[in-house]
Length: 200
Image (tube, rainbow, N blue to C red; front, side):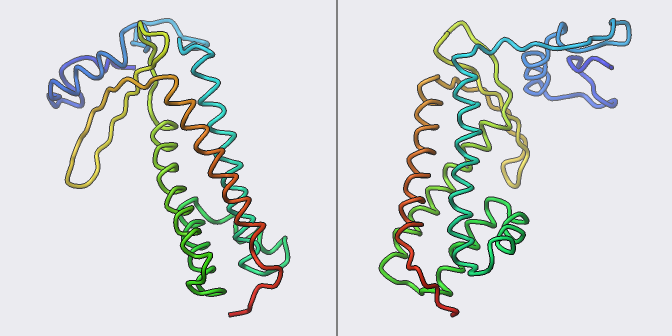
């Protein structure tokens, strides 16, 4: 594997910011060169105190999605197996949109609708942060109560963005609690739905 910390990649000179980021993220001991022995395993240096929150986030977000799908199943108003089939094709964004659209089709903008809009907006916000956490590279620092979150994006008018920022352990813990609280709100909304769902 060629070194990524050089000034060139595929014959092109890399900007200093990219080269610097690669040097920080990929120090020479973490990747293979043509003359390196084959590695059989890799171990990161992120401690359990941080990993427990990232793992809790993954499990908790799956439960949030499940509770939202329960509302989707009710609004679809089909046998459970049919609802499960339809729900399995939906991304989280599509699930939010489907819940909103189905609710309006079944009930219109009734007194419950503003609360549902708020729940779905909060779910969208939490999904964005969950995606950033999931798809970031995490690095330990000298501060035992924080990690460094490294994220590289290249989208739209902003172009290439290389980001390094400190992410406190307490912020991770609080984010997980936000997911759990929102899950509880969706459970409450589910139980407040009427037993009979109108056909239109």
